[in-house]
View 1 (cartoon, rainbow, N blue to C red):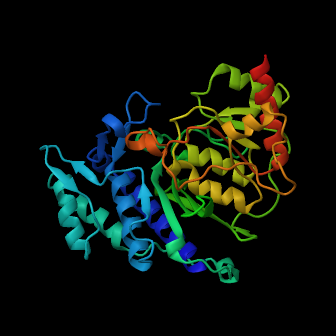
View 2 (view 1 turned 135 degrees about the horizontal axis):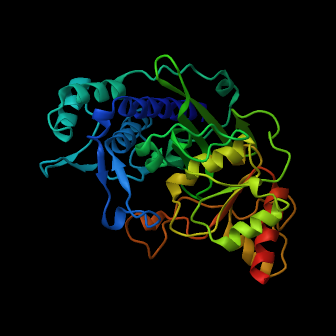
Length: 388
């Protein structure tokens, strides 16, 4: 288990390095963007983009994790197709090849003959991440075989913020509402049999920018929850003592009002924040109390699996909103039997009537939380909203 988690941390940091390389030169970055269409398009946005960085990161994670753990090969899934089309209309299937030169040769086809850009990206893919081993992983003695796991990858969560590249938000209470700070790399492993998240890595590639060099540095977080063992890189109690909520700007006014009442009528404690992975990370770090998502087809398995594992490692989770609300309507408490987890999102079964990306949409909505008491309060507020 520790070896697998260490590998996920390594590839997430490698992914963050690739993301930073792709953003370092604006001229290079303009070459990387391609609009998604058809079933791959996220219905929440009028336009939705995939970048070569997205595709390259996803394929790098598949390559390195699958190579090290053959039992996981074929069970690593992500948001992106590895098909990319260059400006000449030629279709190229992105993959990590045996050597940096071979990978650069393939990338040159996508980058319209830009050999320098292809070389930089290939070097980022093949180079060591530079991540120091986390000594806390040595204490993890839980046994789990790769054949028992599946992996969800979101190579660059909050792609729109990544493309826009803003860094003017100074943050408030540890939370940024938009910008590069909301971008995350998400790698989460779940049990193939029950679909529950077991371990997750959330990497923020853009946390601090050096004022002299302009270069960004990031930070990684991880958590593991399995067979009664809970271990996380996040230590200590939540930073915020007041109830506060993050959500997407696409949520309806009735949900915002319900969460406003939950937060004592203080609108400053209901934040509209970019990035599903980042919003869940804000809960895990304890900057806010909950992340509420009521709309289907706005978040997906790759958005929530990794931070869900981190939250479970902290005693929280990502509760299935539809199932929890059904329990409320029937007069059943949100925790059911004493000590039993509320119904959680699971990651091993597709939505039966979905097409393309929609097969893995979080159709039932969710509440991400660290404290079960916060979950109870959020569900109560939403239930009262339904009755009015």
